[in-house]
Length: 165
Image (cartoon, rainbow, N blue to C red; front, top):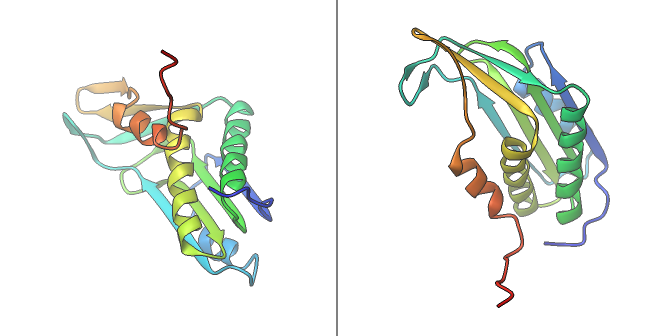
């Protein structure tokens, strides 16, 4: 972890309209000629859950608070690694299988920082941003609960705790 310099460019959006991940990455790439690496994660709506098919999903959020939480997560990444840019686009509303839900893209001078920052951002987004998912299945709609594996992934970025005894 470095004592990073400020990231040149943040673009954080929460939107109901679909987005094109490739176009978003191209726009971020065009932002600077200093970029040596770009790493992107695209999460998309899948058509299954642990107990069967999923026909659609509705994502809800807390307007204003969600954007502030995402900005805080981006600032935390920029404080850890030297980055040129961060772009986070997250859908809300009703989504169908195959549609992109989230894009997290990071640019940096070097690939290592870009990879680590992208992983950090998605791990923290999954556990710290106020989004709620409701899946639609053949048996009805249900709210999705947080997964232990997401919390474990985010915990890897926390400093090790020592027992005071």
